[in-house]
Amino acid sequence: MTALHWKLVIDAADPHTQAAFWAAALHYRQEDHSALIDRLLAAGAAPREATLTVDDRLAWRDLAAVRHPDEPFDPASDAGLGRRILFQRVPEPKTAKNRLHLDLHPDPGTRDAEVARLEGLGAKVVRQVAEQGGAWTVMADPEGNEFCVH
Image (cartoon, rainbow, N blue to C red):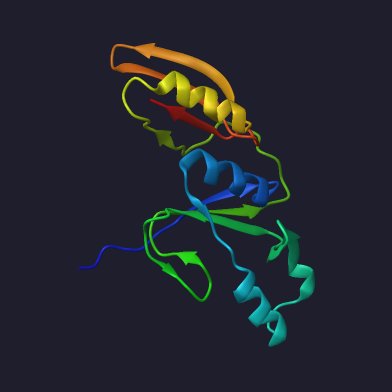
């Protein structure tokens, strides 16, 4: 039996801002779908209203994605075929605690420096946790989604 391919999808008010934050936070690559969008627009298969310009390139208005830089990707669409996060625009705001979150694991002894780097990217510290099982920092990304730095 072959393992299933998957991606994590995160609802967002601004998928492009979220993709930029998480690409920087994880040292991932923002996917560039402009070549695919150009082809679809030229073929009449996508409306211009479904796009916008981000960093001087065409992008989907309601979708943005990041991928691990060392994993395979589809060169025709720049979509990752491995570890990938897709951000999709939704109309409703975040209203409660996440039911799913990322845990980031920087090198041992570098948590404080990593927390400071992430704050510089726009994250906020929610709380510090020190329990019998370990210590970590709970943070929130620019849209308030919680994640932990161990």
